[in-house]
Length: 216
Image (tube, rainbow, N blue to C red; front, side):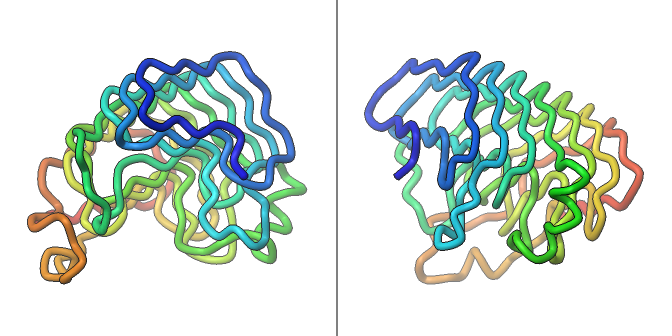
């Protein structure tokens, strides 16, 4: 089970908590819940259940969420996951801000990351469907894993995301920031979105590696 699940409830605030050695998700806020605030918390050694594939520390899908001022250390799948997958129904606009968080892996954890973590992820991972998401002033550093472990990863034709003024350094095996073009999402029979890779903007980020920014 997860620690907090926020469903059909608006205005929940989780502040100044400490999460340690949690196998699954710490905060899961569904699309039907608006105004979720996750602020000034510490997440350490989180999302490490070997049988649970997608276990972000924080997952937010509702309207007007805020993930701010948190410290994520040695996460599993990703620190923060935002937006909705292209197969999910977005009944309310998925919108919010992810800001001023620090996300990193310690030296010992990073040395064994290739054996213990998933590939094809991001410290901040963004799904396809977003009404509006701003990712700003985050400090992401010293990230590794098996393969393609990004700093900020906007996947599957992400839409309506503004990524700016982040510091993304020492990403061992992939892009510092990755927003890839995936036109096949538009034509899939199970997809709820018919126009991908639009409404995105990336600027003024400090990186020491590559950025991929693909539009239509």
